[in-house]
Amino acid sequence: MDLDRTVLNRLDRPGDYYDGQFHVPARPDGELVIHSPADLADHCATHPYALSALDAAAESARRAWPAWRRLSSEERADYLRRYQARLRAHHAELAQTIAREVGKPLWEARTEVDAMIAKVDLTLGEGRRFTDAVQLGDLPGEIRYRPVGVVAVIGPFNFPGHLPNGHIVPALLLGNCVIHKPSERTPSLGTWMARCMDEAGLPKGVFNVIQGTGEQGARLATHPAVDGLMFTGSSSVGKRLLASQGERIDRLIALELGGKNASIAFDDCDVERTARAVAFSAYVTAGQRCTATSRLIATPRVCRALIDRIAQIARGIVVGAPFEAAVFMGPVIDAAARERLLTAQRDARAHAFEAVVPGGALDVERTRGFYVRPSLHVAADPSRVVPGYSDVELFAPDLAVYEATDVDHALALANQTSSGLTAAVFTASRDQLEHAADELRVGVVQWNRASAGASSRLPFGGIRDSGNHRAAGIVAGLACSYPFGLQLPGKNDATLDWPGFGR
Image (tube, rainbow, N blue to C red; front, side):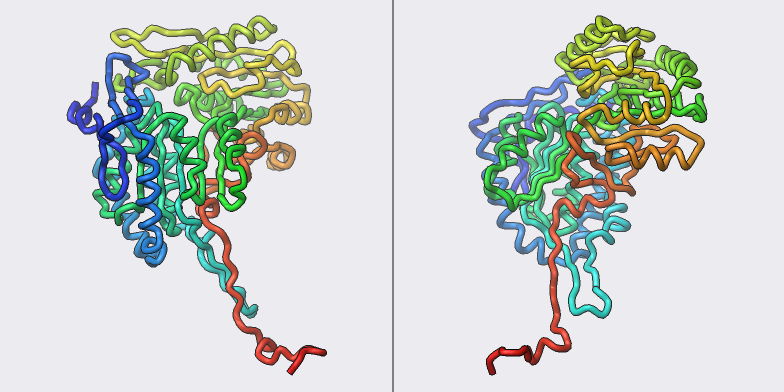
């Protein structure tokens, strides 16, 4: 086990971070007691929390905002480069924390920290051009982008560093102050981010972290001091947060929600490449990615070959504890997630889905966690919807296969969902890709690539139940700023000489 035990003590009871320091509540309203989903004997951290910390963090952020937004963009960028340096310095500790609290294999946790580091370069480089001031040529004016003020970032458990970081870095660069609320399942990455920001010397109140349950998240989303909200999580919670806004029509809200994503394979696809990409997308992170492929829709010539090859891959996937060598997939996040998956699979099999690879709960030697096997089911009737299986995001390592009669039938099946996050299209034909991209009701389309591999250099976000048209990725700055028009005098403005206008 490649685990630095000195990390353990640095996570326990750190408190909330606001006004430039950590505060342990004297009278906590509760505690988040975190045990690793990979090994329930591994106590990761205890985070006592107080609801009153939100008000203190909001006051801290409000005080800091005027001075922070008046810094030049390059001065704010310098702070972010220092933050990036601290992420690099703490790379091993960050990765170990992710592996323990999420249950990801250590190799995957390391790639998440790499993505956090890379986000700074992308934001300060290509990302800037989407919110840079625009001169309007010979027209008398320019477009500028202004920060909205105090931004709340509510993060998910599956990528507790990378996904909130993808909102936090652009928000800070544009001159916003941030209050971050981590998932109650994975609170410790927020603590590490606060430490890195603190070591980078950010002014007091610019970046704040509060802990707590969903109750604290709901209070943050409606707090009067908050001008913008960026939430990553389930569609059901996103809808509740949107409904809670009442008359706050001025609050800018960006929702990055779940998906029931399809990979679509046409007859001319490369079967081996397609099978490996689909299997990766279905089973990486134990299926706990919003971009995971949960549905494979294939046309007749390749469908059986894909089923056979993916089944072979699924049976060979190594499931185990995060710090063991050669492990590809860890556990799901908790007992409830495992039980939801097993119940949904039982319902599917009761409604004529064939269990080619049955899945099920799994005992891992020398550890007690929430492990499951990868599973593969095939629909007898592609048009039949099984409630709780076919129509909802399972967030677990299960893949359902549907055979389509032709290309248009495949695209119709792909759109037969309320979600609209991502899709992957496997075909040798650029014309077929363009036809699919035009028909698919999603925010991201991958061509001959895994659906679970979104690029940070492109927009990332969904439509329908997967988001509200406020994409993250390279354009994340647009979700925490607003366009401001500065009109300059025109050649005829000085006289204002209009018919009937008094002198």
